[in-house]
Image (tube, rainbow over all chains, first blue to last red; front, side):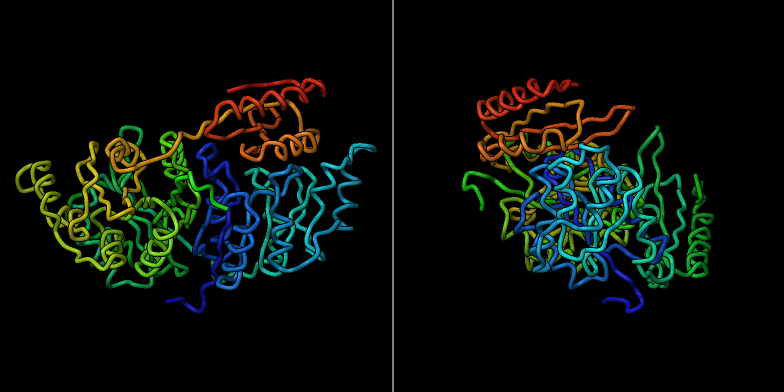
Length: 250
Length: 250
């Protein structure tokens, strides 16, 4: 059941390179951390191929179910960049040269360099709202609640600041992590008890194995700091009782 | 349109930690590379929360559309591990102790250590087929075409070998990458021409910016080596004509 105060987002990663395994997606994490900081929770992520019908159907399904949709990928100049034409189709809008976008790129490139390939990047859905790109010129765009960003992680990240006025979030989602030198089965029943008594805090348990260390990170998430602290004290209490070593708190 | 010879898979990443941005998903890439090597193509990836209704609905939708479904995450001993009970519900099967799984974990742990938390890991859908775990004991399982694997990347990876007899793939999907010192707009129209004349090869174009280098990787994918080589030679021909430097070929 959806908490009415929650503002929910979906992320659509468009790109055969993620589905083939060649590239690991990092944009989800970047977007999710930023969205959490402004009080928006990511409800679902889909990774889909560079295929017009799939993009149209996925966008049209998710944009009606969630408050905000972010797409990543497919807005460059090559033949496999079909996000803008697909979004035009999804909203039944003309796919055409964006006059303001044209001016931006005409000024960005040296005379003679704003060639046909680059001009493809300002073909957009009619009346799309631009998302400025401080890194490499070519803007993203939004139509209603759908925000289309590039796939290159450093460029995507640099464009998020420009969205601050367009996204209305709720209370920032806070988190606290307690990392323990133990195994999950040692704490499972005590942790279940804390979760059952504190249903308004999302409690996750994640085993880790790295740098020669083995342990469990307990992650508490809520928009209410006092509710997180209350859970943390209950957890520290059973951790203390069981004489489990605390590795890290953040 | 689906190529009848293609064997298609879906990946469902179950876990709030990916949706919150805390953890970057690497299991998609690991699974996709392995699946490609045995001739299975990943058609879609969904990242969904630890929520029973969402898991049931997502699994029941995708398992009917695709040849194989792989889930990752949610099969540990804690309260947020609800994959096995959700899959039982999706298939309308009893959720119960798996006798063979019980024997495996009873032998794996020292006497007295096979506690209630650990026993939760062998509650599974009735008659599920086990997927052996050479790393940490607790097995995954499959029901029909749905294969449930753990979320910890090193453990997931170690279990793939045990699936070789259960997954019937097609011809392995081959790829070739040509990396160029150029920008996408310089090659966009020539590349479009090659793609239009070779629709049976998937051609992707990916700008890269790292380690002080800026360029474009062109990735060719097909199950036919000669079709990839044919495209590669057409691409190298225009690259040569345009006097573009080749950075790397693999």
